[in-house]
Image (cartoon, rainbow, N blue to C red):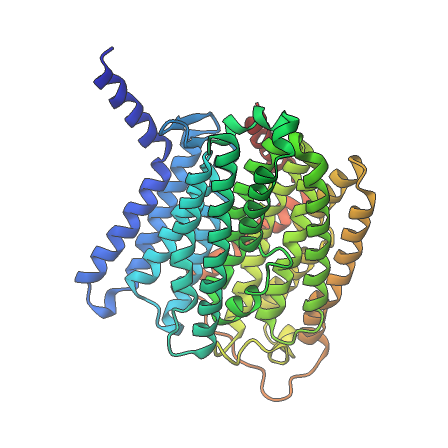
Length: 491
């Protein structure tokens, strides 16, 4: 076979490896083009076009299966882990777009750039999930981040939106700098940025003790910690979540977190064996700080969006519990919980979005008083999602936390599991506080009339509720899928 034929074959394999990402980017560009020629009153179809593109990409992921397909000299790999996270990310994007069908009418975001930015950010997340080279992960992170900065500040007339976007952008720029500098130091110590080539080197005691390499690993962790809102790198989260359009907040809380954890899991599960004495202590402390600070801060919030923002920080700490274990069981638990968290958190934001009347004023907890008996369907859905977030059976949130804490106990991290359980118990207070407002406190005035949900919006809520209930009762198939995904990484 001639060199030209070999190059063409390698190129085709590389393109096939990133086919789901190509479909997402092509849809984003198509939406931008159609937006130029569509009259204002017909722009609502742009959301439908975006949903079709996401559905095609999701179908492609399932069609490609969990088999390993390498592309671009091993810089990107479609494997079980990448497929699992692509399903999580694309599911979160699809739910967000379904909810955007109604939200865009209420808030005037039926614009081509809104949907294109959402899709382009999704493509960056997918590259992060499949990146096996640190530079690929960095490029995916930037492709993810830049559209999100714009989306957070999409409501330019709202000062809280502009403020949140500016804080997110400034801190995000610093975090990207830390990440890139960390990659540079790791390259200086190892001579490569490919994760697979680093793995055998990490068992060399001289490299594991190298100040340059350890500084690089530390800076790399700082960059990832910012994206997943680990304490003390979480300060941007409440303001960005509160200021962003609520549909974007829901997307950020699920998809961005999943993408960052995808890269972190891929790096840590492969490198933890050589650096375990150093890394387990760092991850242990980060997990405890994140759980505790997130939950304690959420206890005193009266704004539901800010409360869910601090709740999101706490859940990042729970997910980190599974990663402290550094093996298949812990990775399986973290993957399962990330999938479950995406559905229950987006569902909670969706119900709150319907109840709120205005972005700046509609998310005060007092507005939920009296909703329970006036609008029982909405109150019931919100109760289900909050109960799951609190880890109460028989919901998927309980199953996820059970496996996370079980993994910690089986590896001797008993105090970490105890602290996690105590934090989970404390979180029940602020979740059930909302339930108390809905069912047991009378409204101070007229009970606010919820926004009328569109069919697509209702479908997103029903899908989220179904996943939370079904995986709380029969989680075995998804747990097996998560286990196979982690094993595909370690093989």
